[in-house]
Image (cartoon, rainbow, N blue to C red; front, side, top):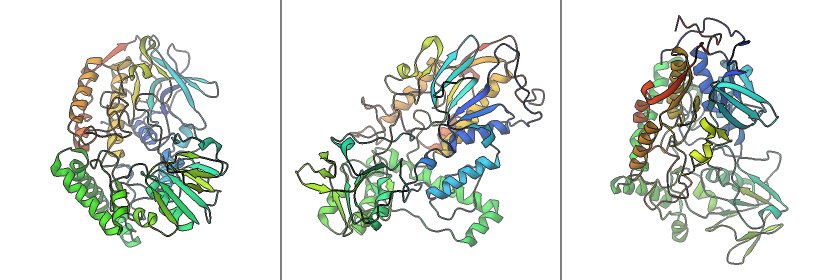
Length: 519
């Protein structure tokens, strides 16, 4: 994207038809929302506001602060390419360090003054005549914006399991995404429900301090070794002093991830057999008991569900103070969990490591587009978007981490950074061409998604697979069925011919802080 220089400060928009409170509103101040604001700021758009429901930036890395919380993507790739960090202390970043990185990036780019914290969006409605989004907050405010960008993400609202009696439990109940740092699990009898991505991180930490820990595993996960290590200060100094060495490390991690992609994505036996062989070898090295080996070995193809990495999950569930129950609880009483065989386990605390509410066919808040079209209605058969970014029927609305852009093998930022550039190009096209609104054509969107779903037929996610990636009808609306490098090529150019638009008499972007002659 050609980046323009910010040549003038924002002049207040006042006294003209079509005036708005905000030129560009971004919902969410996590990684993607902040990155989008930075790119727009670099391009010269000064009147950009982020609407954040919490009191701090950080998104999932602000909310998920349970013991052991860490990233399963290597640190030097799980960071902005335009804000490389030479000082990561570990090969795989832990939550406190990642959260600190996000806050430092926001402060460096002076974004805090552009964020409205404690602002929860309840609905948004598009006014086609004015080319304006009317955004309603939980506080009763109505804000107006010319462009609305959703940077909410899929992993934001915790999902509690549906177990009879869970709401009657008198002990401590908490979710990994809603952790109570003031509650001490030391010496307690703790039950952990779940065996997925957050469970394999929190369980080893709980096992170290709990008197007794019971882990309920409904479905085992495929787990491979985690190539984590501390990064010595001398190595950090080399990355600090040599941009080439830092870029080379990121480049190497990126392409190693791309090379591993077919082993996760493809349904071909050649890839599946080799990937499963590696995971089973990990089990054999760490689990001696044949019965437990069978219990923790999945009966589905690797890649169907999220492939996890851990070096301490298997040792933790074999500890003297730990028990693995290969099923979910039957019901819960005030102070115990009843198993399906009738056995009762008394517990002081229950930790739900059961993931998030994934919006496979629903928007994170009600969104009304052209002619009263509701986004939930448009997504009744599963969420769809053009390149994961734009949805027909909803002008001037863009998504970051939208439908079918989830990564299965690499950093989500490798996807969202291309989306940021693409959205900035779309907005720049609107400004240059005096467009009141811009909307992807339905035929273009449908053609794109037919191609995506056709490719899904040859992935591990649709061959006898059941996971949170899929809707009830079996449609994958979550993941991208291919390499990141080819997704990047898809978003490299913005084609105005893919969109329909409406013009207006006067230029709506005057006074937005962009020098049109210079751009």
